[in-house]
Each structure stands twice: as C-alpha cells, then as structure tokens.
Image (cartoon, rainbow, N blue to C red; front, top):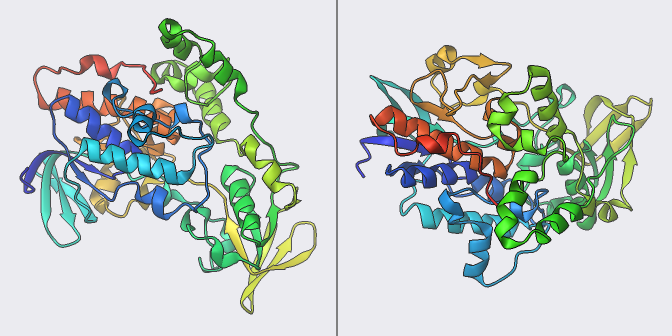
Length: 416
C-alpha cells in the first residue's frame, strides 16, 4: 500500500482499532493501521491485574467471530481462566493483530489536519499520509481524571492508576488509594500483595462488590447448542446490566430508542464504582476509610501529608489516584486546533452519527468517546461488536455507490 495516499487510516492498535480493521477487510477495504499493539493494556496496567469482564464479554469482535477467545484457546491449546489475567488478554490481542494486519506502522501521529476533501496525518518523522477517512481508536488513557487537590503534586508521588504498570516500587511504603471502583480495589489488593501498607480512602459510606455471575454461566451452559443464539438474545454476553436493562445496554438501537433520562441512567449504571466479587477476600486485611475526602495535600519531605474531612492529618509515601476518567475531546493533542474548534461537541464528547463519524467528514471515533451515541458497551471491549460493523458500513457507503455492508450497520450481534 502506498503510504502517500490511502483510503482509510486507523490510529490505535488496541481492541477497537483491531476490530475495526477486521470489519473493513471484510468489506473489501485494506486499512492502514498505525499504533503499537495493545500498548495501553501492556504498558499502563500492572502485572497480576485481571479483567472485570468475563471471558465471553472480552472478545475482540470480528466478522463471524473468526478470531474470538475460543478460537485463540484452540491455537494455544489451553483453556483460559476467569477472571482473565491481563497477560492472557494482551497475548490474545497481539495474536488477533497478527491475523488481521500483516503490517503495522508503529510510529506516532503528531498532527491530523484537513487536506482538500480528505485528511492529512503528519508522523513523528515528518512524513505525511493522506487519507479519505481516519478512524481514531485512542482509548481512555488521555482522559484520566486528577482531582484538583492533587493538581500541583507530581505524578511520581501521586500517579493516576493508569500511569502504573510496576507496583514493586511501593513495597514497604505507606500508600493511600483514592476511590472505590474496580481500579481502586484491585490496585489496593495488588499493592497489599506487594507488601505495601495500604489504605483505601473513599467519600462513599461503603465499598461494594458485584455478585458472582454464576446465574448467567448456568443459563448459558443449560441452553442446548441449537438454542444458544436465543440465549444471547435473552441475556447478551456483555456482563452489563440486570435482566431488565441488559438488552437496552447491549444493543445501540434499543439504547437510542430510550428517553434521554433513561439513556443517562443506563450510562451511570455501568460507571457505578464497584469491584468484582473475587476481590473481597483479597481486601480483607486492607484498611478502608469511608465517608472521607482529602481536603488538602502538601508535600512533606519525600512524602505527602493529607488533611482529611474528618479533621485528621495523615502522612503517606504515595497516593494512587483511582479516580476514573472524564471524556474531553480537547485532550486529543494530535488533532489540529482548527479541527477541534470546528468539531461539534457536547459536554466534552464529540457529536457522532450512528456510524461514529464526527461532524468533520471522514473523521471517525470509537471507544468510550462514543458511549453517548451507541450506549454503555463502548466503555468496554464488548463494545467492539457494536462499533466495528457500523464504522465499516459508514465508510463503505461513503466511498462506494453500492455498499455490500448495509446490513452490518444495523447488526445487533454481540460477540460471544
């Protein structure tokens, strides 16, 4: 493929970029993929971490589920365990990449700008790539949220949870973990297992844990082979929502038919800070300070001094900010400022079509940044089954008079 001029460029080689590449290939379009495979999962998550989602909700979607986790198990001749270790998921993603794309451009994109009727990407070595369509699948890392109290504190003393991959440096240190969601609880468990003195601090009155998924597992196992597709309609394999809400969450068309208030409630329901049931035992010896906020932080010597809302003063060597993410499209530094100014946004989110095209013709975005358009699955790997087909269908429709993928745009299949 000529680098100078191509039809479609995908920026990002994580689950959403790889899945989109697979669907474009099925449509007869060979995308040019830029990125380092699974880099966020590999470099910004600690060893020993496990996915909150179950195995059937962790497939990177592809046409006909050709490269599912079940297919990967056959290749490695080993049954994957649940919860799924991050190392196994990274290896699966790297295997998926090798099946989908023979060449991966691992350079960095410095700037994306307009180029006549298309878009232009300027690489870190100065080379330029012209494309009719660009798909950004940059993940959630750019949106890490740091509370104002920690604005002047170095990341060395107060890293966000997404900044850490090696927790061994905290051995023997006193570490505070701010938050009560999956990241906060799992990092606290991992730090405790690294022999750090850990304390969880949360403004909530208690920490909560998800129930084991044995009912869903039993339901799936008891559904005979010919009826298995029906079981996915009744209970989509997303691990999101309850029996009443799971179908509205899983399928974008059903999500979009809900009122704005219901849509917002569904989005909040999957963002509720809560931990996996398998973390409970691992945290039994970890201190938890509830109904407490950090009102002031000062650097004292080589550590930190906290003034807390209960009036106490505590000292820690480090703090891990497991404080979540806040979507803000202005945080994408590779977009030229004129593009950002022109792009329609709402509360930091880009306004997208159901094909995930922004108001800039030919510029697409997938992942958490599209959760308000296609629903809560876009926060998780399972959302690749909703994003990939729609992006491919939209690009094909724009580039060809007749689209062989018009049926894909309304596809409601969830990978499993």
